[in-house]
Length: 401
Ligand SMILES: [Zn+2]
Image (cartoon, rainbow, N blue to C red; front, side, top):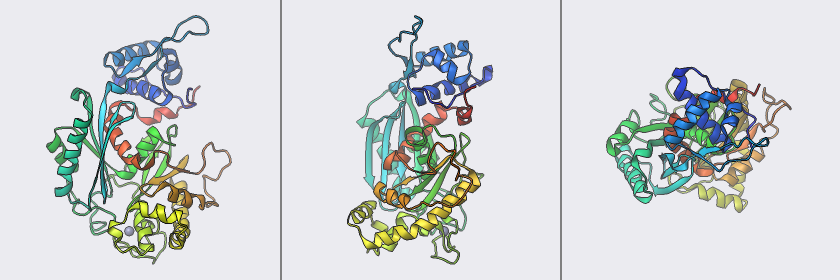
């Protein structure tokens, strides 16, 4: 089935690599396409498409499928992504877990490893991440020439003076640490780093509920809370790479004190850490999200009370995001167990009146993420492929003429 969304390209010679990405993206989001179908979706000329398809087939990034009989006799060859055309490694580091995956060009996970960690410092985590990358490549053998690179997702914010260095939700000792350079030195592989919420937005855009969306916000509920901003077909990162750190937006002036030095921050009400605190767990630093799922199943009163208290701040955050950014939808996900997120989201209605409260919408205002707890690590794995194969996503937004 062909998506309603069109993909456009330009025929300028200097935009050749852009056009390659447009073709790959058209096939990746729609499934196998003939050259004629690509032409209809992209507005690239037939000649341009023929050249690009041939080039990508030679590079083994695309492969020809069995010929389809056209309605009027013209046989058409559909082209699909060659999963084995390229591979990527995704690594995710959080307070308690390091996860690594190898995905192929189609995004299928070919190997996965996870390791418990305990709020690791760079000195502890970097050798571990390098070892996970090495183990993944021993577990799943492939032609190293076809490795696009390593993508890393970890909690933000990055390099903010006076904020979060002592906060319970940022990892300790990572201020100013050159993660990409150091991991590249240890592995000899190109490394891209992104915060976990942005990586999750990419994961959800590629594999989840945001597949065909051009503007959405991903609210990542982890130890803290952050937002990944995918706007007008682009990831929006901000001037210092900290856009979306809304966990430290004040939702209750004079409210609960936050590790960042302020009071009443959103993540003091909506985060794993906020839930653990509310549950009076003996050791919230070492609590696991599974605890929340178990307590929810038992109908635990304290968890119910936390959910009830988290609804208002979350609703307010969604209101601000809708009014400021006018996204198609807000996707909620992260390390918070899915049933708990569903219970929280189920209570959000009625949402505040905002620019998003129109009946003329094709997606609900709030969606629960579909890519699961591996959303971020899948997004991390997509980082190297993403920069290699994806067009500026804005081209996905031009409607068919
Ligand atoms: Zn704060």
